[in-house]
Image 1 (cartoon, rainbow over the protein chains, first blue to last red):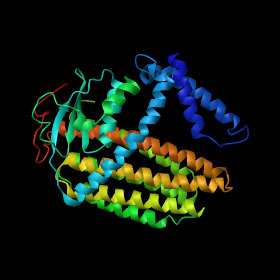
Image 2 (image 1 turned 60 degrees about the vertical axis):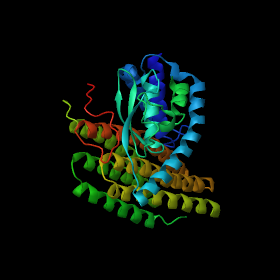
Image 3 (image 1 turned 180 degrees about the vertical axis):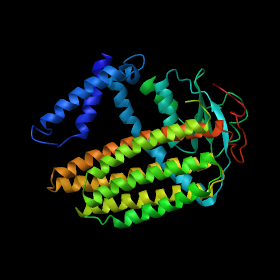
Image 4 (image 1 turned 120 degrees about the vertical axis):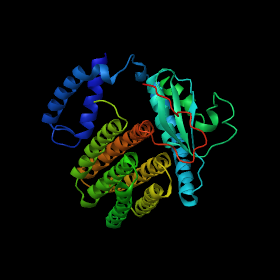
Length: 170
Length: 85
Length: 120
């Protein structure tokens, strides 16, 4: 099953890259054969690297949630850019590195969350503790209320993104 | 039809501003950050050049350049933080 | 086609503005982490809009009766955009971690939870 999924993903990317190459439909016959050979090769060699422990990302509901997630993500990204432009013009910064615990279990959701908070307002993921799944976040404009208690509340730092990450890949 | 040539000129000016930071930047991490930014600008510029000359091969080169520059960034970061290879 | 050209000009304007904000932020901020804020967010956003302008133009010419080359250009631009989006954020994470482990201190920082912590 791992082999089939890996080979199918590789073959579809190959077909997407060689679209419009010739006579048999959208693709030429040689491209189809060479792509199949390389897909089988890639599936045999890389199936344990491409897919981790289980196949839960095959669930179409997770992909639909991911597509829905792109809209609030894009708005947060636009807000982040306007924020950074404001800080470039005025030079007003107040940075800190804080530790948050987003309560995520597996690597996929942690990767998604780290990439999201790198691109969203005022935060940049610096390091990750792989034993306890805690993230170290560089925060450009610190709210002094959050710094008082030690297990920090993640809602003022990264909003509702941990809930989205849990729903998509948790 | 859009005239893409001023876009290329503007991206080149942007690239020159970034390369100043690559040369004067204090310390290796700053230079690495500036170089990675320059790579992003180069990928965008290659896509725009492909549209300007109406050649698809520039965009293929842009995809390969993006992936290779990512690998370069990862390895130089690994070198800076002092890991063994 | 005129509407598509206007849309493309708007996208190009937004993209170039944010690319320049990223380039100037590299000189304006004091240390590596804040510079990384400027460059990662702004150049990714600017590149999204510039490549979107290319996609809109090539799709428009393709729909107006262009040849197959325009469709290939559209699809490959989308793939280049996806590659750029995935690699930029991950590369920023790798660079920030490398900077902190090589002993780079965040300038003017209020708190540093990661200070003196080794987790490997």
